[in-house]
Image (cartoon, rainbow, N blue to C red; front, side):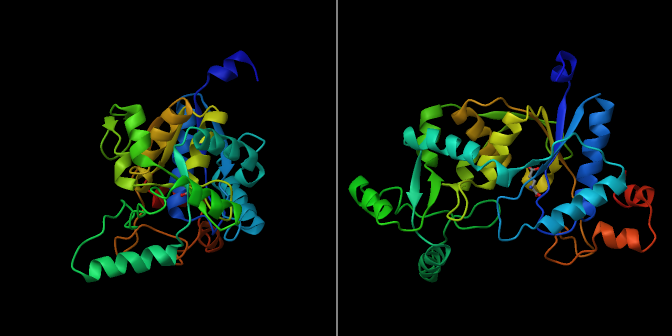
Length: 293
Ligand code: GLU
C-alpha cells in the first residue's frame, strides 16, 4: 500500500451472508460506494459470517454477484470474519485478563423462564434497544471458585462484558461523531442500556459487537456507513473501542427501507431480493431509483 493510499478515507460494506441481498442492503452498499467515490476513498467488503449455522458460501456468492451487478466495486481481498477468529480471541483475552468479562452460563431458555416468572408477578424486566431482556446478574456475581469449577467441568458458556465495571473503569461519558440521517453531531454513547452484552458466543469465539470493532480497526476503516437500526449498537462499539485502545471511525447511519407495513426489510420476512428484481427485468439504475438515490 502506498503512502497516499494509506491516507485515503476507508469505507466498508459488511453484509452477513445469511440470506439474499435485499433493497436495504442495496441502499447501504450504494451509499458506501458513492460516499467513497465522492471522498476519493477506498471501499472494502467484509463478510460477517461468524454465525456459521446461518451463513453459507452460496449466500456469499450471491451477494458478490449482486453487488457486482449493481456496479459496486471493492478491493481485494474480501475479509471473511470466519477466517479471523484468532484476532477476536486475542481481543477477548485482553478483556478477560483485565477482569472485564465473565463466563455466562445461563441459556437463552433459562433467562426467558426467569424473566417470565418475574413479570408474572407484575414487575417489568429491563430490555435492551432490540427488546431483548438484559442478562441477569447471577453469573456476574458468581463466586470465583464456583466459576472456575464450572469452566473446568466444560459447562457451555458465552463471555459477557461486565458493563458496570467497564463504565466505572472509564469513568467518563463517551461520544461518537455522527453524520447520518437521524441525530447527528457529537452523540453521547449510552452503552449501559445494553446491559452485559455478549462478546463471545458459545458456538464461536466472538460476537457481532466484538468482531465489528476489531475489524474496523484492523482494516483501518475511517467511515462506517450502515443502517439506522445499528445506531443504538454504536454505543457498545464506542465503549469497546476505548476498552481495547482502538481508533474511532466517523459514523453515518442512513435511513432504512421499510416495507408497506412500515417494517424494516429483512431476509426472514421473504422480502424480494435484488436477484429477483434483476430477474424481473430491472436494471441497476432502477434499483438506485427504488432506494431513493
Ligand atoms: N453485518 C451487519 C448486517 O448485515 C452489518 C454490520 C455493520 O455494518 O456494522 O446487518
